[in-house]
Image (cartoon, rainbow, N blue to C red; front, side):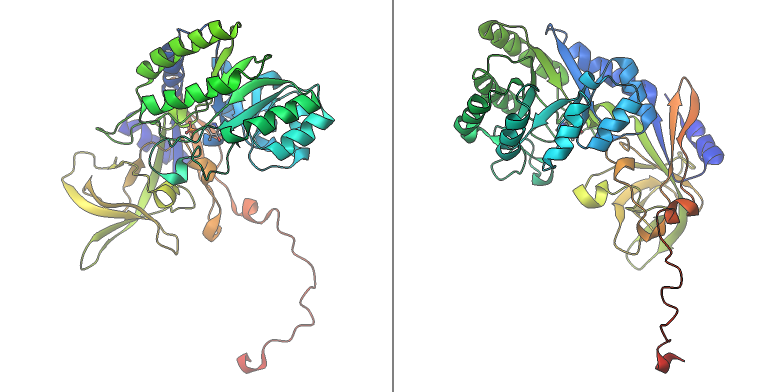
Amino acid sequence: MINEKDLLEITEKFGAPVYVYEAEMIIAQFQRLNRSFSGVKKLKLNYAAKALSNISILKLMNSLGSGLDTVSIQEVKLGLLAGFKPEDIIFTPNGVSLEEIEEAALLGVQINIDNLSVLEQFGNKHPDIPVCIRINPHVMAGGNTKISVGHIDSKFGISIHQIPHLLRIVELTKMQINGIHMHTGSDILDIDVFLYASEILFDTARNFKQLEFIDFGSGFKVPYRSGDIETNIKELGQKLSSRFNEFCEDYGNTLTLAFEPGKFLVSEAGLFLARVNVVKQTTSTVFAGIDSGFNHLIRPMLYGAGHEITNISNPKGRERYYSVVGYICETDTFGNNRRIAEISEGDILCFRNAGAYCFTMASNYNSRYRPAEVLWYQEKPHLIRKRETFDDLISNQVDVENLFDNLEPTPTLK
Ligand SMILES: *Cc1c(COP(=O)(O)O)cnc(C)c1O
């Protein structure tokens, strides 16, 4: 595993802030998930590209034998560019146009439709293209509604209460349904809740005779710090596999069990390194202000995610309390009242669990550059994305010539 010295060398070589991903950890997680479901005959893991979509990461997943779960036509194209075969890509968008779905279908990608309106239109136009349907089983996974997408008011999926209407559309259009899907959102804490949702999926599946797969989505919880609860993958694997095998026997066909893990595969493999610009003592607290902000890592502000923060420049230093904040001209607090080894200006702080939904959510807010990305593989750092430059900021802006030539300066300001 990568150590503090390696990380500091990476910041010297590639600068900071920088994202670092440990390939071996991604590989280990992929294999761990595979092992947990070794009890099923046909297993398919489709990596959720939106968690971390750098093409080198996609190529790593492809080499491991993973498929790809995509939510936009651009992710589909990235996947194809990374070498995935179209049939190993599933397109699971929400609220996109019929045209975008058709474009993906024409590329040979597995389509997953999550509303009756598009299902009916697609079925009418392309009855021969097999389609997977996304079901909303109305089960709450985890407690945070920002990341729970299976509950009653969620915009995701076709409600199980609409199955009669769904069946009518399928019957009238003569379209072929080859997969049933659910994704109840991040944070499967309670395996029994997940298994309960799976039963709803099995009940739905019995309505369709030509199924090839059942896709259970994702939502595996990973620990953010020691002592955090994580999904017990082994137990889930044993229980769901045996239930799935029973279902297949009953259904009369060996279906593929599919998952679409994002966070589980890449979250813990990622580290974010940023330099401390200023240590600022106020009457009530000590701020460590870093050379970054929610433009690079928004999860703490958007979801209240508690990324562990350590000072890798002074790992053995005496611990003190800090509020770690960014440089964005809004409140952008990474962590309040954290005990961190004594921080001096210029030190490098390391944020853990920065593999999933971190770089992919980065922006240019405050006209800042998005950081570099480095893949650590076989004990060596490989630059997999250059830090942006000023040219990147302006390359799409159109400077219309002479546009304001006739505009006089405001007289009182002369
Ligand atoms: C985001 C997403 C995933 C991945 O979720 P994780 O919590 O990162 O594992 C899987 N399936 C769909 C449809 C998604 O939108």
